[in-house]
Length: 416
Image (cartoon, rainbow, N blue to C red; front, side, top):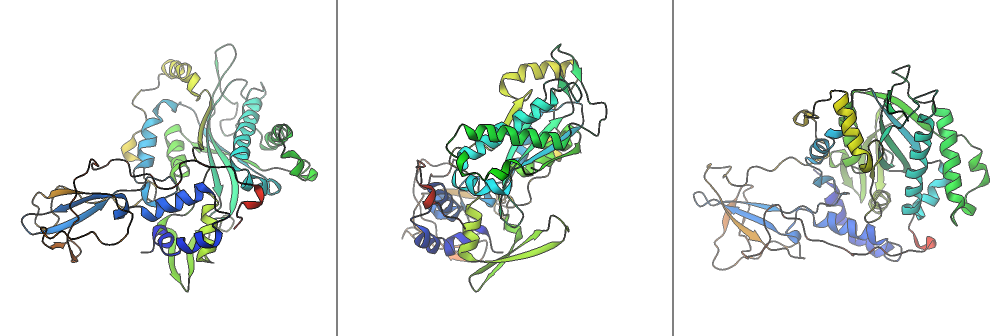
């Protein structure tokens, strides 16, 4: 099976050589982390069975949020932390999409445009929800930024998960008259356009936007997604899914990568084939700026309102047990869980662990003279590089790549 890590290891050096002068530090760091993921470059452990001489290597993960190999159980853990957001009300998924005229600007000024996208969309939704014709009070919002389409094109948008419940100024709870309707989409899109335009006027970027952009119809989608528990499970993959999962990659042939995707209009499975360097560039355009928070909470879900939310839950008789996390489905792009390290998969005897120190080379581990060759689970004969280290199993992986993200001129940003 070809993985994203394999593609980056094979074609990453050529990509860096071709676009080195236009490669953002965040892109370079993501490439380095993905290429080193679960290799000896990050260190790990070698497990040896004293009974049958079977060995198994367990290398550390890169823990990079863009790496599809490192998302196992991430949705499970996130769902467990969202227990306090559950309310006995229908939930809605509201999506704000940045219009095509602003996407080039967002690509070259990611941090600034993504911030404004969050602020304008959250403010527009809260303002319309305060209207007495709809909810007439403060609502809770959980927002997630996503920047890609199924075929990896640049398409910035924000998903909001919102319960059909509001806290009125008189501290009473209000619900919409129609449980299948929250707020009207067209007025919400107009309000969103106005707020984002007003925010851009306060920056130097407004002059770069075509005037007709503010006269066009913008897209906002609002749809019901069921109960709170079901809605959070629905949203979890949006949070931990990267632009492309490993199971969608079909293969590499003649330096061209082929992957599958589902067409949004026809719902049919299609394939896309791109030159390897174009594929890497299309993937990297979805790497977020260093430290950028892609999940945000507003209104009743904000940190400042958690005490109020807890009181509301108690008044409504919501149990404190939260989501049945064990029933949630982890993201499909996560790698299968490795076998238990302490037991030999061949004879069932306890295995002995030796720490492998992180190295920069991807070559096979060195073979100390005092350590005999051992038969591995896969049938390959090689021996571990024995080295005592402070590194422990499950410890965070070593940091790879630049530590600071520097300002890059607009003309220097690579556009795949």
